[in-house]
Image (cartoon, rainbow, N blue to C red; front, side, top):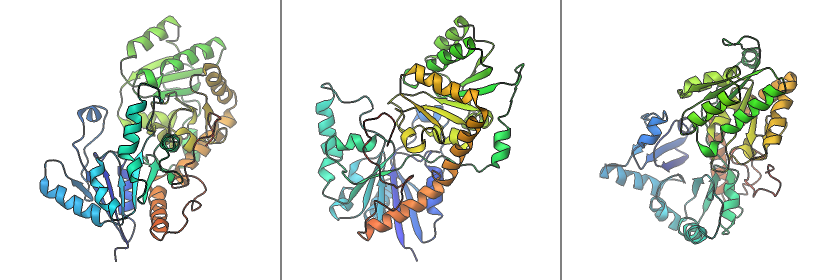
Length: 398
């Protein structure tokens, strides 16, 4: 018998969503649908996103019959998650008092100022405030979502930790960590391998990695740094490498497929994640931790306060603080046992807590509690579906 019908509505089904969707659709007694409201953008396709058809997906665009079927299923479902899709999909079920979640990264990535305040007030009311009397909850795909929502008193006491759940690969941990030991890959001597991967754009700050490399070389550390990706800053970075005389220890590898990036992560000792507050979630954090890297990450990234316990399974530095960034990297270069411990703990955090399978099971449990009107805040102490609190004043704690 079907115990629960769950529907996820969003713009399109991406490879970041598929592991969770597969996991929840495989749970016994769950009937699951994913409703796609739009065709995948060319920009996303150019970034390596693939259009993958799934039996649980209903594509409503350019198909009136599918749209009508989807709306019926949404109205009838026990639980609905609304991602990047119009509110009109959930208004009828909200008015009927049915359990619904919104799913969002932070709202105000660039902060609030007099320039955007009126727009923010209007948006907060239109998309959130007017629905607060209904059983509507927020799945926070950023550690900063709860705080942004609370600015206008929305979702108070109704925010839960969520995120993106790319494939969590299971490795033999000893084998995985052995791949990282003295990987030479054509370089003259065994060195600590450092990896940066992403689009080469301003708010991801790849240039701070070049500054780091210059500092490390000047201090005599033995390392190699690989930078994967392309973008508008590429020529600037190449020039920096030349001018700072880093061609013997820094390489730029260009754009790569997600599979190739993952292969480099598996071999890297250290992964650098340097984005600012514009990074809504940052799935490369899940992937680099899953690959056993010792991650050094900016506190501003949406996933960082959720996934990293500073000093246990990674290191957090204050966004923009170059000195602290360099000190954190040096601490793991100097101590190989510490570096390995961070990498092993990072791997275990993803496999044992932040995997799609665990998120799916927890979401079902959370939904069941809310449907029964039972207290749900203490179901899980940490990880997916635990309470997402408003961040405290110190820059990394949650």
